Length: 150
Image (cartoon, rainbow, N blue to C red; front, top):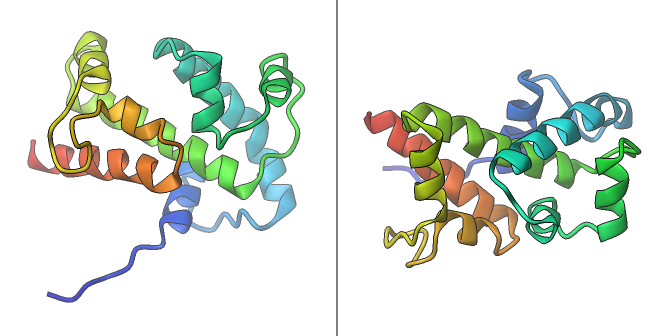
């Protein structure tokens, strides 16, 4: 079997925009996506009852003031990295909705220790909060594979 490298950044960008022709290196396109992406992320983070610190980590370690500016509606143009992170987190949120019959089951899975390979005894959320883009991708890939088996 051939080993294929996946362009994770392109996949995340396309997932966020729902259009494969979005180019996040183009500032105008990032500008158009930034405010909706932040609003979606904040709504999802509220549902997951994430702390401000957890939200900052998932967004790539943004400053507390930046987070509070975004929360109050003063949203600057997000970087490519930030948009990709939002895309991954929203993809995880959507996958949880598809895999679990109810929010309680999804939250229990997200926050409970998991001994499957990518998590090494950590909860999937704790794995995501390690802060790396690869950590977000690991959870997203796990859920996508799980969805494929159901």
